[in-house]
Length: 583
Image (tube, rainbow, N blue to C red):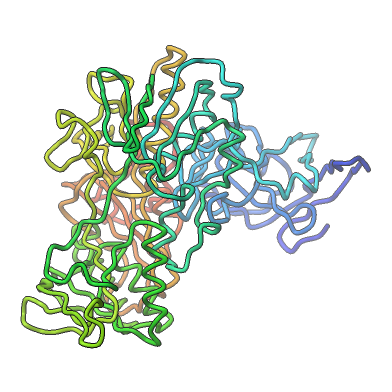
């Protein structure tokens, strides 16, 4: 087989049911390293593939395999991220074989293919590699190239009487449930979720609106049954008896547990003003919410949509509606600059101009005072009265002003003033090693930020859920627990582009590389650095992959350059991802 950049020759195939093919790598060109200071060049022998380098090569019928060299050994895996299909050769590889996707921060073990970090759902496929002289031989069947590889199911059959109960079937709860089996927990797993449907990818709701359960479900029902996960939908927890280790549901059911995972998430913060009960005043949290919002918008030819709030959800919905000119969109905000507290003033101003270029209008430094009903149908909203006295026509209203933890079922002794639950670095509740909290309700420290922080993001919920599952499995075997050491990785999709962001602590100053004034919207390319003093604590980018993925690993490892070094021109992509400097 001949390709423009590299050639792979099929040297053996056997006509079995699953035909195995051995491919000989002859040569390929334009090899580039994302993590090591090596020069691009032509690779014609295994020795030309340097440590820390990756290259996707063509095999089979338009399929690709990723070759990676780590500590002198060449590994072959599937070439695309199992989350959204990003090309992994453009990602970031550490010296010990941890591969980070360039798009959303999913991490894999290049040696085993196993998931290290969310949001990936499935593992990478791994293929046998043999180096014979100056040849690289890859053993792979055509069928295997096309298959997905689910996380291992090591916890069946159930052998222990221990029961792990998970409250909440959102991102964190779902991740904990399947990761328990992945890490070999062989007790009973029970999940209670108040939603009437399977766990979903909630990030899709604000990026499309027209989302069905088939498109949004993280896993089919069969997946949970195969793993012995008792997934209970439409089941709400009423209370938790910590001393008695019992959970009571609103239907009177009482369930005992050995381990309890609190993953109940958050709910939209409501707007307590006159008219908030009117039809077509919407919130967006669940699949039911998204369906109702979509139906309301579709009932008009081109509705006037008023969005209250400038958080990620409101801004993403605005971009969906404005991009295709589906609606006249007006955003009502308490401040001039959207997302200022998260991204800083300069980036926030750019985001606002980006939306305004697409026709979105902003009403800043105001508050909504009243939702006024329609004269034709008094049950529906018709306009929004602002604190300035201005009246905005409104066929549909979306209130997106943040969220609050769902923890009313818990004893007050566990709750902070903001209704969150403080946990230790291993995510267990202090003095209750059998009790864990994950996701939106959890307030936890990290090696990068010893102050406890509560983070509302789908990916953080998944990663905390995965860690809790690992720790429960370790605890069941009386092995030492692990601590949370991820650099929180975020993304927001607007107008067909993803703005990526990693942050470990609140920032004092922002330094932007790139002209945010003259560049326009989707074509803009920039990197923003967030610092406390001279220490980098975060990074955001648009059209600059894989820099945020690289920085997320540098922050995790304690190897990130200082702000002074960045300003002096240091290329962060040339900073090696070697052993951790921390501790």
